[in-house]
Amino acid sequence: MGAQLVVRELSGPEELEEAVEVQRKAWGMSDYRDAVPSHLLRALSANGGLVLGAFVGGKLVGVSYGWIVAGKEVFFYSHATGVAEEEKYKGVGFRLKLAQREWALSRGIRLAKWTFDPLQSLNSYFNLVKLGAVAREYYVNYYGEMRDSINVGLGTDRVKAEWWLDSRRVHERISSKRIAPTVEDMERMGAHVAVRPEKGYSPSRPRIDASARIVLVGLPENISRVRELSREKAVKWRLATREVYGFYMQRGYILVDNIEDREGNRYNVLWRTSLDRVLSGSNPWDEPTRR
Image (cartoon, rainbow, N blue to C red; front, side, top):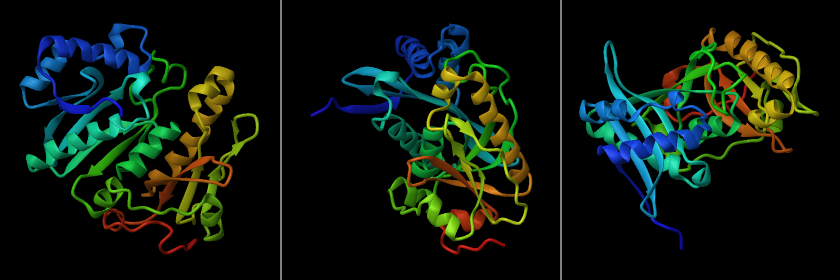
């Protein structure tokens, strides 16, 4: 039986210093300047923000932090959630996000936002499928150039995640109530494939169909691995997907899902529909139609 996972708020100076180290491990940071410092985490935790820590066997292995934004709309902005390399893909990040959701809902907040890179396959799956977030905005090089091992050399293109915390969609996704078709099934239903993974870790040339209601955007299995093998191919992935997301999301398409083909390649799913329909729990394969 594995060590118990505990998620709770952080506040003390020693724990917040540990949180800086977890950030470095999570993102492969070679420079402390890339991590949010402990004094800023302390300011957040003491002034209306939220700094969460995940402990396994008493050791801090994950952090998540953000703050409440009160303007025309009130939402929780989750700046970052990271897990130390040795504990990734074990459900730690999911537990941190669920704790964040409970904290926000207990304060009457129904929406959380953050950014993520839609070129990261596992990150897209986590945000869109596991959590049930959606995205309607795409930003080119949002943070400028970053030096950590995940982002270096690729530019920081991002989508803005919207996590509608008490929606039917989110309830169903965090409860694992989702059965998705394959990419091949979606193509037979009329979905348009805008980018495909090709042999040799390259993307296909982007294809735009302005009439498509459902658009599939292929992803590399691991863009960091692609960059290690060929910086040129990694940049091709960024430019190809940037063209596709830029075109469709400017026209109201919503990034809603992440599905597989029969060879195990993952694709993000864009859908031309209303936000209300998505949040009600509808999926793009419920009413397959091309036009």
